[in-house]
Length: 190
Image 1 (cartoon, rainbow, N blue to C red):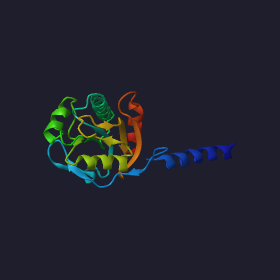
Image 2 (tube, one colour):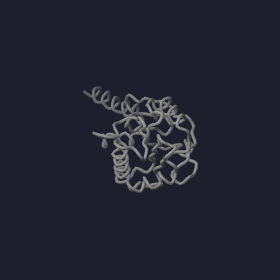
Image 3 (cartoon, one colour):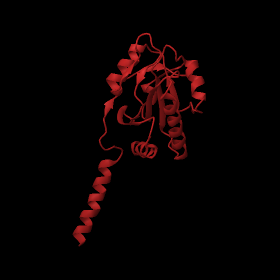
Image 4 (cartoon, helix red, strand yellow):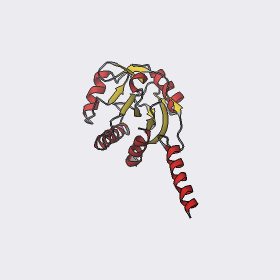
């Protein structure tokens, strides 16, 4: 009986040590170094996210459908993180329509959602082809603006990135957002 208790205690200790700070089935896709322009017309990049956990998405301000719900959901996630006193978290929204989404446009858009811009950065300052390649190569997601069309094709995921700059998980950012799961995963990565 005593041996069984010792084995049980050691198993619990071993399992808790193995899962410390890691998520099951993590993607571990590295995000390369980048420097873009935020809503304040200031440079912002991967170096600003060093040793921080962050959530990213791809949106644009003239989006006729999913972007506003996504941004609302990101805002809700930011509020939940504040309530949970999660401090080491940043939010990053990459514009998929950089020609239209200049810094001042993104700043106005952020006000619609009460974004806390101390911890949420709306990024632009790149060419259309650059964000399309960046999204596909590193986030494994499509971004495409067809010629002669204002609509930009993109998906509605939220991406959780760890302190080492590696994408861990992706979640629905539009409908049926798993808010509690995301908050729990953020806490795990802290």
